[in-house]
Length: 255
Image 1 (cartoon, rainbow, N blue to C red):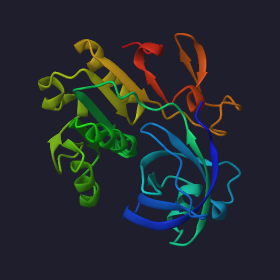
Image 2: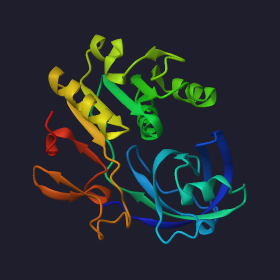
Image 3: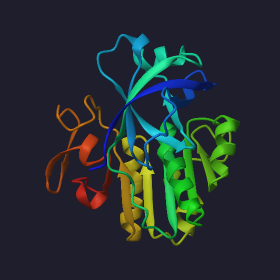
């Protein structure tokens, strides 16, 4: 199991892409390099100003050159407090946590919904470093921020879907033509549970391996509190330590 670190961090940038979406860049307060973090892993972030007793689990968006990047949806007390933080403010994180995505694909289809696009960017970048250009389907309710779209398009062939038809394909991610047009050897996804179930069903119908990153509610992040357990073919397993990435063959989903 990879070594875990308690990291004292400093905010370098806290950019509001829109009122409910933050792009956070963090460095270590001691100037040391970041531990290696891979696509699908997450950090447990402590936000001192939130007053919350528990840390907040957040997927790794990117980790490079001593900088940890997180894409954060503002949904509650902790993330609202995070939105008010400024460059130079201190945070703390436990990292890296969780089981990452595999890198076995040669023709990968990546599907991200909402803030679930964060680990998909990290995964697409890892594939790109191996000379593999992934097909990345991104589903949102409405047009995402241009800065985020440009960033995604740097590492993958981007296919946008919006619920309101304001940009890209008007409809569900599974209905996008690329999902039926490509000869993919693996499908990897993160986002709302109904979307991931639909993606898993699509992959199963095509006879293709599928990995999903589950977003069960977590507390400790270490597999001790058992609040994030998921039923699997080998019994109940903790998403934070045994996942968050699972091959759908391990799950008891009816797909």
